[in-house]
Image (cartoon, rainbow over all chains, first blue to last red; front, side, top):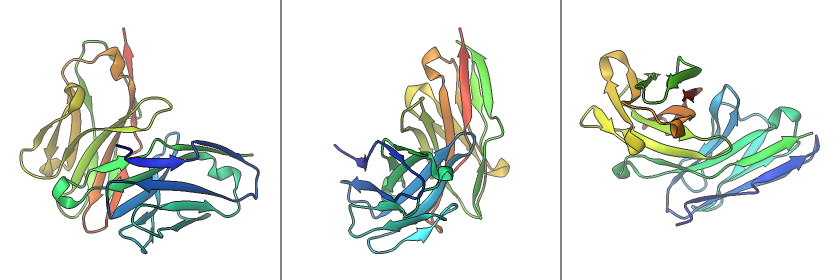
Length: 114
Length: 113
């Protein structure tokens, strides 16, 4: 089972460049999430999507945009990358309540902005 | 508002000793609670979860956690730690009303031989 797939795994950007992190899940989950992980700060929620076509801001949305065009895919875009966005990014999807709301994570995307 | 606090940033235990990692939460209703483990450079692995029923939850790798509503806590325990348990541990809360999964800042576990 593929589960949650993120691409790319590693990326180096120059300040001001743009890029999109792709995320896809094959578990037919409605809810999907994007997090960033920084040392000592745990995982912080950037954006989430409760269903296809809907998105909501999380704790740290500034500098990011998201798109949920279909049920499988939830992409995260950095329009003008800044060094403060150097981080590890995780995509996740959530099982339905009857399945205990378990969250499944991708393997992470390591992004460096120089 | 929902929040998760892990008071211990770093814990060191000897191999074979018992372990307890603390997690406190704030949420207006009964939460769904999770513990995840992350090895260096890796993704997150689910250890266990609580959403109803028995307040003592068993997980993988010999871990267990106890939900205590009166203390707003969900502490993770293991009776005998192995060197391979060295990792970072995250407590997380899912709030059904908000659809958000919020994490604590993590506890880094070191295991001494």
